[in-house]
Image 1: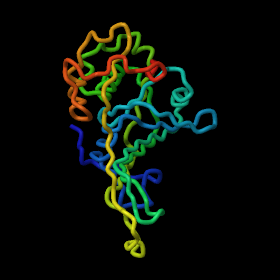
Image 2: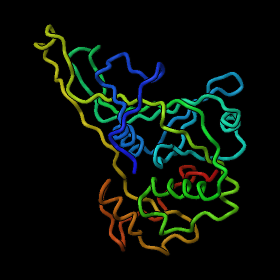
Image 3: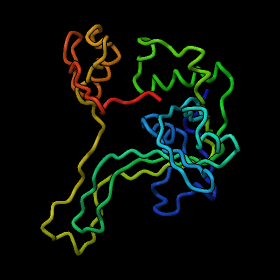
Length: 247
């Protein structure tokens, strides 16, 4: 069983030097931030130029998985063994100080260095792809058609070990200089959190044929306005141009 209290030894690349008291190297902190985030940023050098790809991810054990089209510059670079830097950031609050220079944010972040491995084992690949669906919305996989063999074959999956990584976390109020405490400016923290808006049903030929699923209702109860099984969604509210496109 994975030891959540295990720590990763910092390296020259991952040791936090500025505000070192905000650093964390334990697996529990690292994994919690990775798991909460919906998006990571994958940095790699492609054709001599830096490239940062925002992409969906999921963590299984001590590895982070990403996926995409098999033929693209980023993945081609990964196949050559190019070094990778993957980052994740969560913003928890706006820190408003009495002086301009002491404004900040409360945040949790992770930085992972390493070399990504292309996943070729079909079982591992399927497990990673299905886990990504569950990462988007827990319980969703059981409600939809799973990926078939052709879809799995047409998708590239890479794994990056969380073996050279660090977290940096800031929480708390602003830290004003003594000379600014008497200034007539409000100071404090504005908490921020991710919330879900009202679901917008797909405006296709099958619209209106299914009630909001159990997974969706659970998600909305936790992250937004509760949705009833019989109503509560905006049918056809997704306008042309605002709909995500399938890659």
